[in-house]
Length: 165
Image (cartoon, rainbow, N blue to C red; front, top):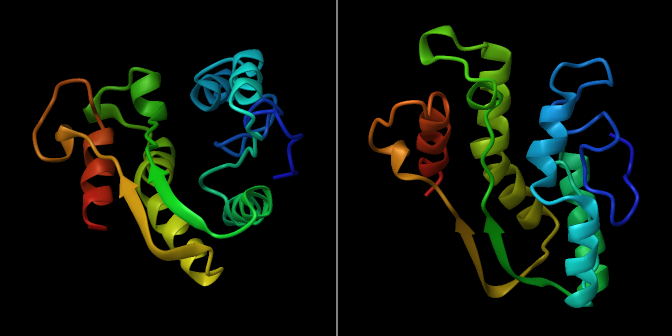
């Protein structure tokens, strides 16, 4: 993935989290998933908070590496706290029933919603970017332990995430 412009959320260049091109039927889905807020609102919030936007594809080791490098530069040192609050399922967004999952999308769900936590932690450790006594928090969802209709493959993804405890 090419390095996006600062302030430009990942997914808006047609090569976002799904690794798709502009012809992908998921291109608009990627933009929606990655942009929760529109670009202007993100930039306005960053300006109000005197913050820098450092976009990254949570499934890309290269992007996570760059995120840490740019973050430690911007912060002037190591990191005190990491919050992993990520979840996305193309199957859920495309209303695929559990008995009719698209398995390519299911693997992307696992990568985004669970495996990315391990990637984030592994790269942080390898790059020695965490301060002593720093904190790491990974958010899950109750569907990791109970069945909820229409949550589809996200239940498995959050169950996998909870295995990393």
